[in-house]
Length: 153
Image (cartoon, rainbow, N blue to C red; front, top):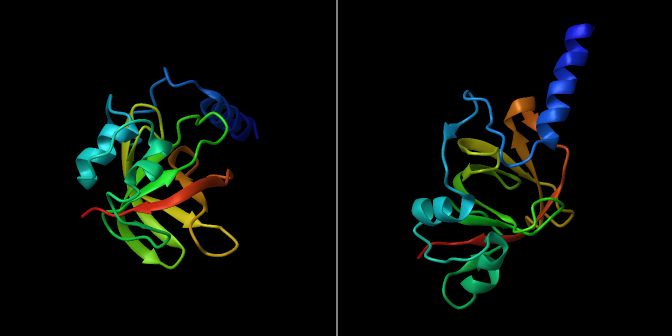
């Protein structure tokens, strides 16, 4: 029981950690890249600015969709402590409501590959998702708002 309590305490402390803390080395690849330059490099989509601004910046420049496609960028809206949103690149579509992504800085200073993201929106339109949280080896409890997918040319 003491080990369980200690493990829960560690998870709670990790969840509250600020961006200056490094994630354990066995969670992803070390990086100094934030999600924006990483998504730009992986997807080829040449937008800039804060992550959440990509959705509006893509209008008329890149196709946007509510349906996931391999190579597309999922744009997260600002939510809680994630004040500038987030970007993740789709690496595989596993069904109508599940994708795998590669992303940078979901865990501080880490690039993660093959991370599940599940659509939990009532209309199955990818406007609300839950994201895999590797330290817990499970989907996170938080529901994150998203705008949709920006498709590369």
